[in-house]
Length: 178
Image (cartoon, rainbow, N blue to C red):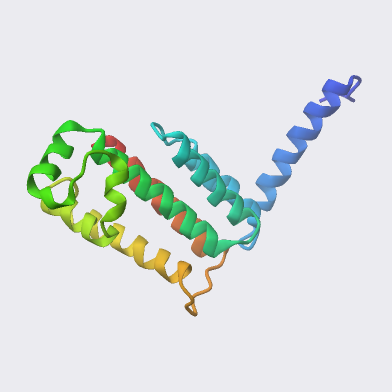
């Protein structure tokens, strides 16, 4: 680009330079700028509601600021909200749950919050909504989330967090295809 002449050109140049710098910094293994790579994966997700979008953006901000435990917990909250909506908004899935588990008294997505996440994953597998491998992966994400949400010795770093966020997004992407 030639020497900027207008304020708009300077602003564009600065934005482009900042993006270039982030891409360079993202190559460093310990750089929080690597969140940009996960953000690009996040941008590929579709059909998220406003709450899920907000939670994912918060988890990315947590990762950018080194709040790795918070990033795990917040992204898992977004995942669970997505799963609740994914079941409740599909009449066939919802009716299967309602008829198979009448004591749950599920009428809408929010009603799933009364159920334990681990139990819900097992039910999803039992009803053939997901595979055994997907159930185990979701249970693994829950276990990691629990380590971050409760006073444990686990202290995730940038690599752990980016991997976790990426896995959560991949699980949502897979469910979106079902």
